[in-house]
Image (cartoon, rainbow, N blue to C red):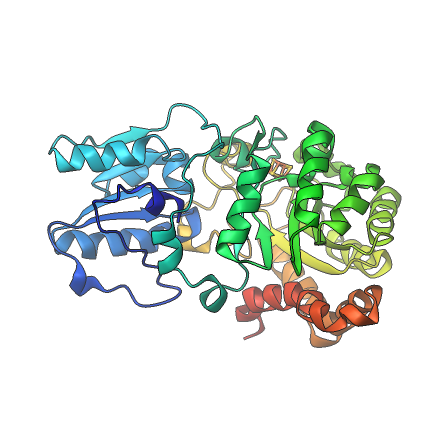
Length: 417
Ligand code: SF4
């Protein structure tokens, strides 16, 4: 939506999302410029779409996370590869194409100041039906993360230095999009509780006034040290923090950029603190980190049951391009080089783990997903979450109390056969 908003007014623009409707290939002509944004998981599909569009004479520009992480690979099949965020290059690409001087690769050399950049236009908002077509609308308020966890691409895709959108622009956008709930896509929103508590305070004061049903964000356990901000966040309609505990295994702390250390008492204290304000906690865990042995699954499940977490997300360690983990596995000959990108969905094993076999990782992951996403498990957690809200809010909170777990159940459903 932002890139479409950057297209000059005199050019017609459409947004095609094949999760919403089939791609209308018949509409493509030699005058079409197709811009495809793709993450690693969908890049093989992007390549297929690009090939069909090029057959009809379109010129295809590919950008997004994967093009940023692996530009040479994308460049081998795209007409133009856009590396980085595209704020500076997208318009230039369109202009160069119009004047027949386009280059093969464009790189956004600097991280954009998020103030005023790529304001969503009414033209674009009118062509996207967020409420009908999307599970939850997405919103972004801050961007970046300095942690550099071994498996994470954020530092390369979003930058090491945290950037902030002006609060009045955030409020204006929420109102103009008329959204009542949203998932905040910020890589590590919670880190800002420490980095810039004044910004967060002012943001919460502003969001408090809006008629929101609730919103969720991604954070790290450090937010538990800021009870005043959690209280303000609750007033600003925060429903849940998604917290990357990542591992219950103390031996993995080096992989986690200093944010989680496997101290389970500390994990429980943070969960309790946040929940005491009526805010939920979704625990995120990764399996297959370097110190993990087969007992990590049972240990994690024990922790999940004791911790009172509202929802859980389990993923298999996945070495995306450009991450320290991938470099290490390559160096050590442990990367399964024949796995297609379409299996980089964090539910498939793509490398040889250090302290268990690939089969053990696969079987252990299956086991814990079956436990966590069984209907009784989801019901237990959902009802517990619902009970934390006053009875008068029950109807409004029904969706959010169960939706996260059901979303994960749907994601992993292919594993249930
Ligand atoms: S803290 Fe989160 S966003 Fe930051 S590097 Fe680690 S996993 Fe990525």
